[in-house]
Amino acid sequence: MTVKQRLERIYATLPASVSLVAVSKFHPAERLQEAYDAGQRIFGESRPQEMTAKYEVLPKDICWHMIGHLQTNKGKYIAPFVSMISSVDSERLIEEIEKQASKNNRTIDILLEVHVAREETKSGWSAEELRTYLASGILNTMTHVRVRGVMTIASNTEDESVVRNDFATIRRIFEELKPHFGPHFDTLSIGMSDDYPIALEYGSTMVRIGTAIFGQREY
Image 1 (spheres, one colour):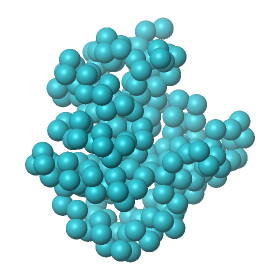
Image 2 (cartoon, rainbow, N blue to C red):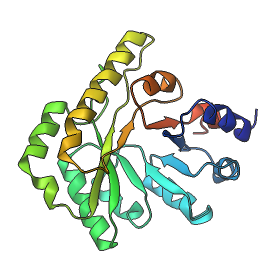
Image 3 (tube, rainbow, N blue to C red):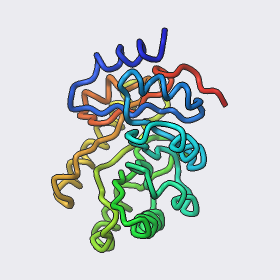
Image 4 (cartoon, rainbow, N blue to C red):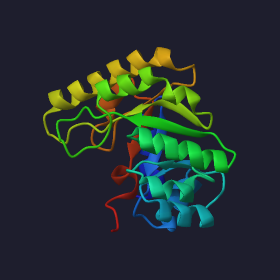
């Protein structure tokens, strides 16, 4: 099955209100071009250097999403062009994005990554940490960062009830945080290749799908 056929199959399952991030990390630019030719415009990368290299050779109307953990010293590489950083998991990283966005005279959209899964290895704020940070008012001083919503990665388990509980939890946090922000706080980024149909039931507005589009990654 071609990339185009796989994409068309996925598009058919997504409501018009849901954005698809094609997780293209570790795949060559030629594969991304195939997806682009099939109509895909949002691509997700996890390494700043890889994203920058692909940005240089691919069409300039692509929206690049940073979906992996971003080290604070790497933000400068993608700040000139990245559309969204969806893995923002610390106050320090927000400050760095603000700094680099300001240098480039841009406002960068971000998602707050919240940890709801059972695995301790997953990154992200706890709900309590996030409440404390928002209450501090520090975020209100950032003029080059725009918080668009939240994201999480559900527990890696075959137990669907656990996955559903994770999605229900992040949905509650999303609704709780909404009043802190304006109408631009509209993104609930949950769901990947294996669990996105369940995520849609919990109001996902953005899914991140890689393997179901590109096949297994080429490391």
